[in-house]
Length: 167
Image (tube, rainbow, N blue to C red; front, top):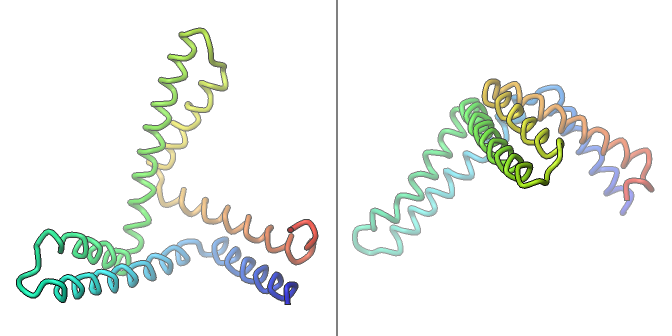
């Protein structure tokens, strides 16, 4: 039983890894569409719960959350490509800003007599990664998903062919 479970999970990992490696865009779109359906259903249930809880007119501020959730769910379902391109764009900005903050801290530490070259190198690399993600968000996500696919495939191979090392 235990061995068959590991075999099935390894096969599932291998299939998921291959899908991410061969067609990362469709994998993301599928996940976003499923998330969109979940958000839409959740928003509708929230609205029904609010309407049921308040016998009179529902509180307008209570409707803000479900309406926002419904809009995000609709966007995820209808335009997953838009979500995929926006998310890495903002992640690039956040990584860039984190790199700037860490670089500033590294210079302050260096000025105080501490710090190393690596303390400056890592924030500079972080800034570069942030710029790359910001300028090319879709390709960055595609490469990242392909990398995850490769990791999943290696994990599946390890579970299938080297089961004692996988534990």
